[in-house]
Length: 213
Image 1 (tube, rainbow, N blue to C red):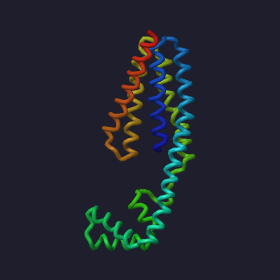
Image 2 (image 1 turned 135 degrees about the vertical axis):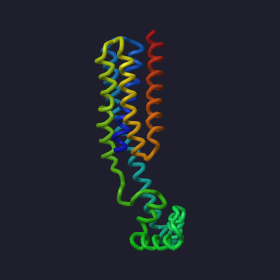
Image 3 (image 1 turned 120 degrees about the vertical axis):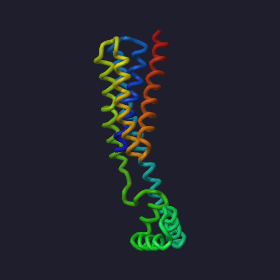
Image 4 (image 1 turned 135 degrees about the horizontal axis):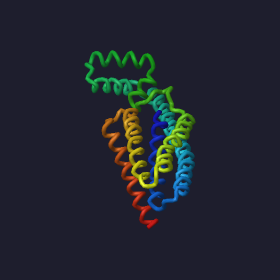
């Protein structure tokens, strides 16, 4: 889901920047359309490969953390026990309940418990790099379609404004979705995404206008 939302968001933002920038340089609809298609294809491959590498790197780091934690439990079980207990105490659990909860969790599965408390992930829940790459590869072109259609279908005299409006609306949804998936502030995530999109389009349009002028 994260890869899909971010892929769609990047597709919208990247291709919007390209087509608006080219539209600032020329009124040739074919040139604008071709530049958008090129950006869509390049971005799709780039995003998929980038997501694959990124998730693989994260997965390798998680595997190393599990190996290290296995050794840590062998070397000093009591230290790991105390670490988990202190985490529970920091959450406001009283001493007796923290001791009891730690004992039960460690007896059930010490490795799963300590990895979760130290590193924040579950031992058997590694993200698939192939799934992430595929999600990104599908989502990026889907996001790209919106600015490409807006710049191509609207009349020449309003297509820039129409593309701005369409992209801002789309980025509002993806910004909110990304913030929700990351348990971040929804309003801040939405506003940050929209502002980034506006700045991208304004800058590329100005540069395109200067080059075309």
